[in-house]
Length: 161
View 1 (cartoon, rainbow, N blue to C red):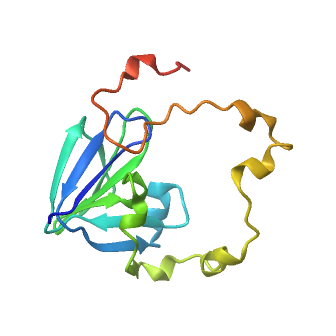
View 2 (tube, helix red, strand yellow):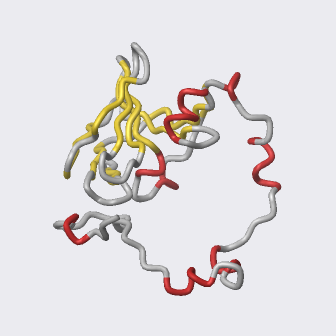
């Protein structure tokens, strides 16, 4: 049976489907990926050998080097792709079920921040554990697109700045 993976950006303006088995799920620690994701590393899922289809909208692009362009949602800023001559990789967190595409290798380890290997040892708390310090959590309303396909998604109803 053929695997199907879906996902999209945070606001739902862009959605995708990957048909087939994604390969080379990875984490990249290089400084360029850190900046592109605004994070300590970039989790990416290569789509080589699978079919990637944009089912709603399409990413805007930034040419981050002479060999790589990166796709993102122009509405919400979600990083979506790493595109090079050898194929397109999708941001792992953009998948509806990122647990199905765990990383198998790390790249760019020369840029790995020294504390990354110790993140699992940090104290851990559930979101609602902070309700006393952040009472707004009790009535937060998410405008994030759900982690599944929708027939339509009315972007006109988004709150305006």
